Length: 125
Picture 1 (cartoon, rainbow, N blue to C red):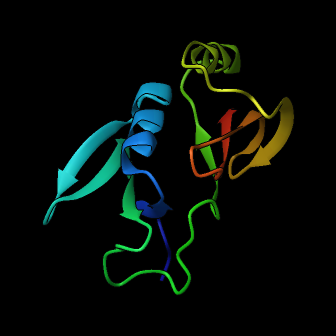
Picture 2 (cartoon, rainbow, N blue to C red):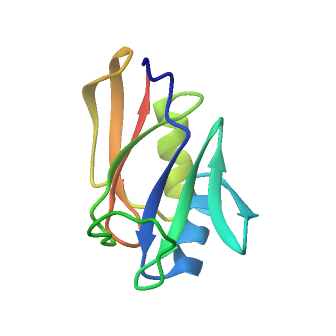
């Protein structure tokens, strides 16, 4: 077997509305509904499915916890543009810009926290 790409991941969240606002207004993702009332945040060819803590869909992770994720998202455009968009949305940068190495090589990154305090790295190659 050879894995090609990531299709989706799941975040367990405390406050569904705050999470949706953060990722749609702040990061430009699209809220989608699928299945039996499930929700996800769509971007590019991927999505983030949302589980509400204590009401997760089955099957689920062995220990689903809000705030336990550490994700790197690649932004279109420049890092300066991404930083300006974060500032306009009122999202504080915790660290950066800093040089990092991603799956495709060197990149520049800033780090932010979502409403559950997941660490979100925003990067540009």
